[in-house]
Structure formats: C-alpha cells, structure tokens
Image 1 (tube, one colour):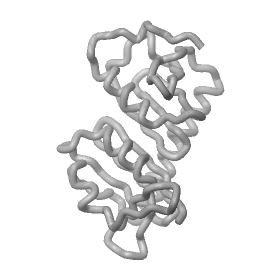
Image 2 (cartoon, rainbow, N blue to C red):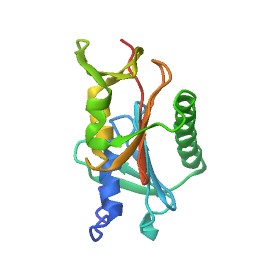
Image 3 (cartoon, rainbow, N blue to C red):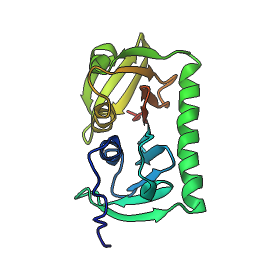
Length: 192
C-alpha cells in the first residue's frame, strides 16, 4: 500500500482527534470512519466516537486506513454502503451499552478524568497473559475486569481535569462507557 502524504494540515482539533482515534485500532481493525461531524474507530474490544465540527471537506465521509506500526495514513476512501452500515452498527452497539448501564445508573457517575482510578479501581490483576483492572462500583458483587492497556488508552483521550460521565456496566459482561461533552470511549470487559 502507498502512504498518503496529504494529511498535512494546520494543527487543529481534527488532527488531535485522529491521533486519539488511532489508539482504538489494532492489526485486524485499522480503519477510522469520518462523517460530516464525527470520527469513529474500534478494534472490537473498545470503541470511540469523537464529535468534531472542524473536519476538512477532503476528509468528510471517508474511511482512512492506518498502518498500525507507523501510524501513517495508508489510504483515504469514500464511504461505501458497507462502511456506512459498519459505522452505524458501531454507534448502535455503543448506544445499547449506554442504555444497559443506565438501567441501574440513569445519570452515570460524574467525576474528573484524573479521579477515575481512585473512584473505581478495586485491584490490579494479572491472569498470565494480560494485565487487568478489576473495577468496582459501590458493591463488591458489581466488580468487573477490564484489560489494563485498553482502559488506559480509553482514558488517555480525556484531559485529566475534564469532567467525564462514567456509565458503569450493569453486569460482568457489560461494557464501561466514559464520555464528556465532545467524545466517548467504550471498553468491553474481560472474563476471568
């Protein structure tokens, strides 16, 4: 594949948001979907939707393919019908996860991003292969494990002093959703 060198723009929120979205990719899923005002990325274990009203015209309604090793943009393509369907399904999945967590916690938990670990971390755990965070929301029966690397990447898109809302999962198979007024991140749990 040929590296697209045309992503040379002035420093804007768009470039910052593309860098944030790259954290949500992996070797198998390495596409970022850009609509009129949103940037969507997922690797199957976590996802992000970032609102952005400064997307350049050349990037609206495009899919960009990223080289995971270098971070370079390899291709920029116009949305196909399949891309629109895939992006829509990602957003629907995120919506379902938020609704499920709102069953027990309608408003979510509002905190500063820097206070996330002190509020939710129960313990760190290693299951041989992966390092995990065991999180707890009020009750010990509500402990859920998350891959440490993925949860840290999700938290990294938020500035430490930003106000975030956390939608804690209803069960051990539910995702955790973290959002502020511009973006959201969703991380799937790990079964231990």
